[in-house]
Image (cartoon, rainbow over all chains, first blue to last red; front, side):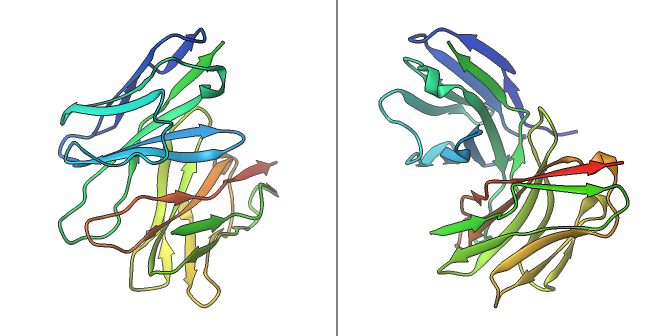
Amino acid sequence: DARVTQTPRHKVTEMGQEVTMRCQPILGHNTVFWYRQTMMQGLELLAYFRNRAPLDDSGMPKDRFSAEMPDATLATLKIQPSEPRDSAVYFCASGLVGRTSGSIEQFFGPGTRLTVL
Amino acid sequence: AQSVTQLDSQVPVFEEAPVELRCNYSSSVSVYLFWYVQYPNQGLQLLLKYLSGSTLVKGINGFEAEFNKSQTSFHLRKPSVHISDTAEYFCAVSGVTGGGNKLTFGTGTQLKVEL
């Protein structure tokens, strides 16, 4: 049963600390998305990668957030330093896009619930 | 760029009654449309998608949606809901471009099924 996995599932930290969230996409998928979900803003796309290369990170605060794919099986989202307003659920999703095909189904992970005190 | 409007933030309905969750979109290009469901403390799961072809799309759990290009709508329907359908439902849109594209989500509709 192929699934997107995310760790940790829950994280409580203090303001100013570094937070790293990890995502393992479904094996064979070439596109990875990072979303943030809050009550006020709903689902926001932060960044996404195709074949490990960043395609769009315009939704991400550049001064404190960074997203990487060190290899095809791991995507990371880091916040440094974290702030209380970063408290949210962060979702990773993966999918497979062909050279000529259009939009794809995105498979979501269970999310990381982040609380910054 | 695309946008999605889900006018109803909450929809209460009695079990075994029909339900319709509304979704309207805006786009300057052709679109793909999706409905996702989110159960409490879980990620999003795809219910159904419209890519091309028949405008009536059937999905999982007895849900269906109809793409109406003239009204720029993609409303989700179920003829008889169950308690287990209680969840948040998100409509999403993507522009049709080669190589795939990112999704823009609506603000979600909370469906609450009551006995």
